[in-house]
Image (cartoon, rainbow, N blue to C red; front, side, top):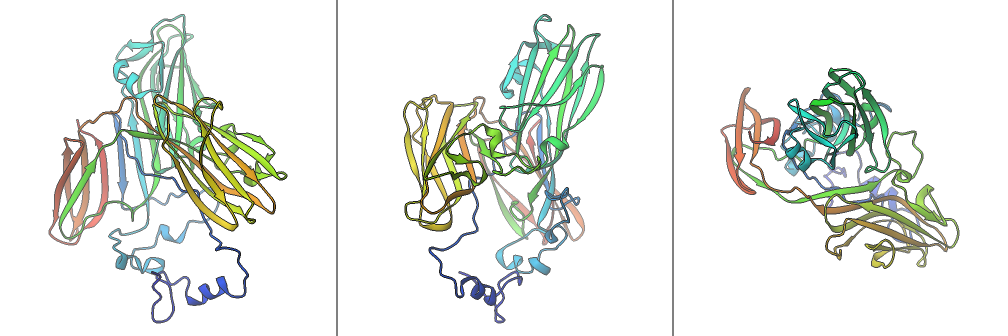
Length: 443
């Protein structure tokens, strides 16, 4: 239900009844026009040994548009004031809106632990308190994945290595699920070195780091990945005065995502073209058929057994004969399973389709969109999510730390969740001002 106040304003007081009348007055609409999105994003905070996530109810002035222009008003606005004046009535307990957190991973380098968390750990063995070449005559390769539920704003890899004469560690980064690699640096001197990743991961949610070892005696002693991230303060599980029941649940799923801009944006975001789609009779711009029909095929692969595919699209299909049929193949295009249709007539619509009919043991799929166009068919945003079972899934006790203030005095609650599903109570004697929420594996 939309709630206009007595003066005709919507809750934020940026739009009102007059806006609604302008939207619909005198326009012949063939279906409701939706300014939509490609849905599919899910929060999934999975922590590996050495990983830590801090999500404060505050920010340091960082935001996703910091390289392109001014900051949004909500960066400094307070809940209950200005454009956020409505928020307390809707249960908002946060002091602000935009949060700047820190996502850090001190990678465990003992080879048994490393093999569990790495995508690739080939030709490596324990050496000198770290990891080195198992055979000096063969290169060693380590590939790590760094997914995040919160968009990266900055990042760095800190490497401490022992490198004899002729030894080196080549560092590369991929922001398209390992399909292509960009050079970061070649480390060829012993000691600690900080490698800036800002330009390669800004506005990304996921990347992979590949380290290639060469030279007898080359040893990686320590590796830390640290990132500034942006999150919403509103969505964090805040505390209120009185008893607060806090619940924790562990799962076994991960997700690989294919989503990118259909436009050439100068590297500001991942492009859809970076994921190696095959286009037949379809233009990359808006994924629109170049004639009466066309086909788009997108590959996607997972590091564990695939459980389901989810396809989110914001599209246009003006004529009832316009649209896209969506299907998937799990046997390299030998057979296809129909998932659904992006149907018309509609000027703008958002749809999410799901396919859970996945053969056991599958780790790769093709998603195909067969487009038909009589008037106009196009896709503004397309997202493909492949949910899979993490190969090394399992529960490890988790330490959850809440930090807040009551009447200007700092309070702290540290709880170790010792089972996959856990609930505990935090009591606040006065209305709390939330400060930080930290999660990490228990020592």
